[in-house]
Length: 76
Image (tube, rainbow, N blue to C red; front, side, top):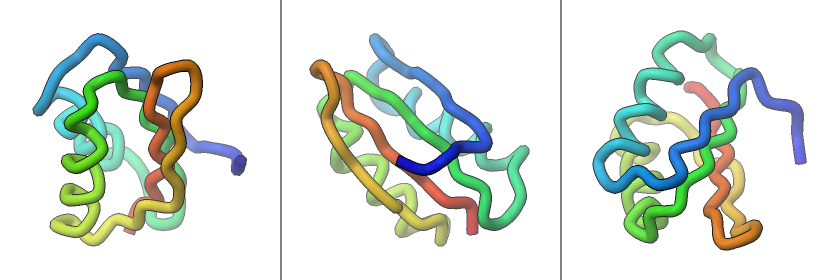
């Protein structure tokens, strides 16, 4: 995986908190920087891609590691 500007772990938090925390983290970043978002909420598998599509940020990668969902987002 790539290097990340920021990593946030939203394990244990349910929708919409992972999306809201991603939005806040991305707001402090500059274009091209990458965010690693870790979530346990299964809804994040639909919510994070939809969030990226709505905001223009790019979803670079998704994976599941130790029952946690990992999303790599790139700030638009």
